[in-house]
Image 1 (spheres, one colour):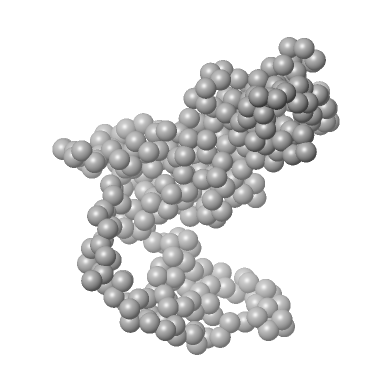
Image 2 (image 1 turned 30 degrees about the vertical axis):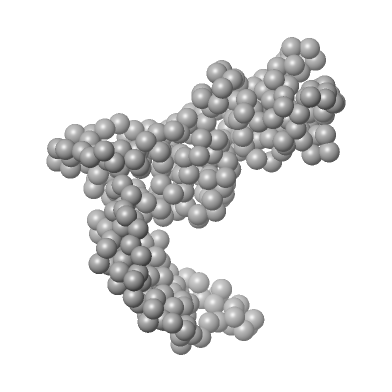
Length: 327
């Protein structure tokens, strides 16, 4: 494999006596092969060019998650990322994870991240909902989310965490799903009630960034959607998110299209709609107020049959239901 020179542009961060973060960028040149990992290159820089640079590492095998950082705009594990796969015109830009306090250089304070994980009580709880027997497929869902290594990549690139620091985050919700789907868990309903509250499952914008950046293919967004399904099945439909989903379900089933004219009213109620009066007036000036009479899509009858089949054969979200195909 040919060796070439790469430029590493690294964000250096230092906390002042006043508690503020001072940031500057520093460039290093490293000769490496395309298959050299970013972590190996960082070791080379710290060992031979600047011993003061700070970053975390431990297992070097994509197991511990310690070396997660922003690499060319996306959070990745430095030990798993090859220089040649991310370099742009020979440049690799490194920065600390986003949405978390920076300690120094590329190291972040993981305390806030794990505070969110602890909030969902990450352990099996005793209760009357624990299963007395299990099948061979009972742990299919559990096994999938237990691949999470708590690296924080999903939280770092989460667009909702960026605009709403109160959002509990995709990693914590994936961890919550791990217990809700565990047959040994005795307080599933209590968990779903908690997860239906503000800043929890319904705050996810479904941008899918967590799915893209997860180095272990846990797909946190999939777990979040399944938590929503379970919560609604238990009757927790009081939130704006749940009402929004039910409004979509009703409209598509009836006409195959959304009735956007009444969608906000059904989602946030009269008071919430009145609060958006100025926005509505602006849309009206631009001619963007939707018609109160939604378009009737062709083939609505066929769509109704699909809904009927799903209602008669509901998907078993606890494991994986056999696919039902219309005849």
